[in-house]
Image 1: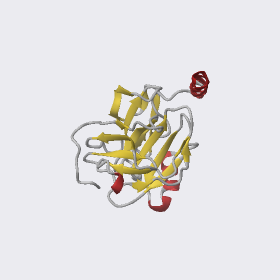
Image 2: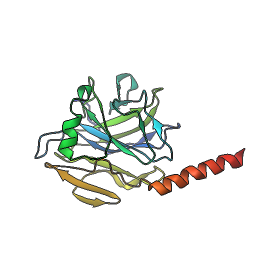
Image 3: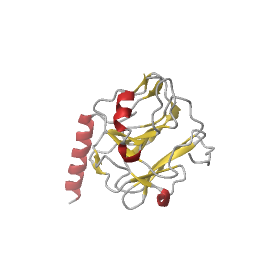
Length: 216
């Protein structure tokens, strides 16, 4: 785990790039609820209207340092409106057990591993970098609650919603996000607040296409 402890509850940074609609929507640090503890993990969500290639993307913890980052593996792209999970797992060995623990069906799970990227339960963060090492988005959190994830809410355009800013997950429905318990741990894997419906995403894409034609 990193020894650095961050004193702000949440800080979100978004790169001015083509990847600006990617957000980190959930993080779990040192989960150790009533069941077998799962790996540290985070969820990313694509609030945009088109798929994004994740080739060469990397993550770091709260140090926000691309030189200390490690590769994201097991997932090649993220579709419009999709939420995917990355767990800390050497060579992806823990992916199958993670799926079983959370009872996941239809949720994409990738993995990462390396020195110095474990999420500190006393306070830490997650940062994402694209293939050019540009910072795409980053969140931080304070002391973790055993067995519960932190979640971050955004509106349909990917702008942060302060009502759901780094909150601790509880069982139930929060905004458009449904949280649930699995073997004693609580989270909402594959579900994020404010993600457009597939129909709305299609309309956003069409609007962009029409707008582009008008400018030509």
